[in-house]
Amino acid sequence: MNTEQPSELVYSVAHDQATPLDSVEITSLNLLERQHLQEWVLKQPEIIGNDVLIVTFEFDRWSAPIGTQPKDRLDVLGITEEGQLVVAELKRGKVPDTVDLQAIKYAAMASRFDEDLLIELHMEFLNRGKTPQAQITQEEASVSLNQHVATGLTKETLLSPKIVILAEEFSVTVTSSVIWLVEQGLDITLKQYKAYRTASGETIMTISQFYPVADVAAFQVSPYSKAHQKKVENLPESAWTVEDFAQIIVLPFEVPQALMDLCAERPEEWIGSNEVYERAGVPPKNGMGKMAGFGYSVRTRFERSNPPWNMDWAHGGVNQQYYSLDQETAELWHAARAAPQ
Image (cartoon, rainbow, N blue to C red; front, top):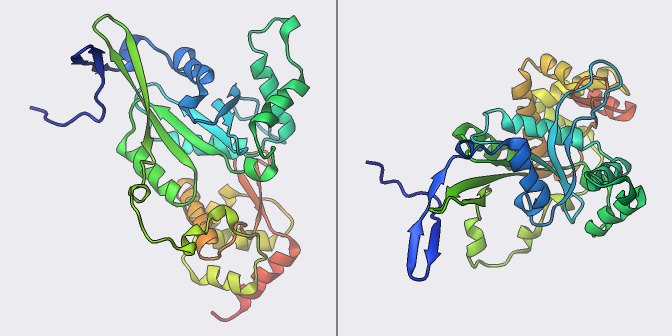
């Protein structure tokens, strides 16, 4: 006998009677991902965030300088009142174990959007289903976006999209990966929906935040310390020095070390992440994790917001991150490599 308490109790209430409702799988209700789940989010964007404005959906017009164009389709793109893009991945039923990597890929590509493209996409979204006479202009779409984003659209906020994954069920593989990625500094939220059927045949849907859960510290009274005020977004952009690079060399940062070696060998040239992972001798999935871990160290150990390299997504025509060093930084890296450790 299964005595496990359900995570959510839902009742139909009539006067003094509370009748529990049984949950049903969304697949059994013939509800589909694009025709139903996606439409709910487009009409009720608070499902993916309280302050989210929908920019566009089903975006697949990715471009690359050369080679095959990416065929990926981003489910929903929104933006918060603070100007942070929201990449929403919607899944019918249980998510596949690779959903976190898929969402990261979309976030990386979306981080290259600029204000002009966002206005164009938002105009197309607002005009969907409208007659030619009722179409809004690009200027009106710009007003809509800029009224929503209180501080105005900036390159800095657009570079770090928030990821929201909405699904009926999450596997342990996905949740453990997401928890680790959040610990490394990525902004990822898991939202869960549940369907219930009433005695009259009506369907009720609930939406709840699965992760991150409310921090216990939020419910505790503790001594105030100014040291706790320090936030990642307040970290400065600082120039990297030979001493900084010496730390990178002696610490277990094999992928960042391989990246710096390659870029220093060919300064001012863009180096693809696949070449970096090959030099480091790690598979791409492990390489991505090690790069995310180094990003955390940049903020905590080195106390700055900027990595020592420049980055550009799909610069060389392949759907991957590209890196480069300017001549001066390359020379500093060579000096750190030459110094006795």
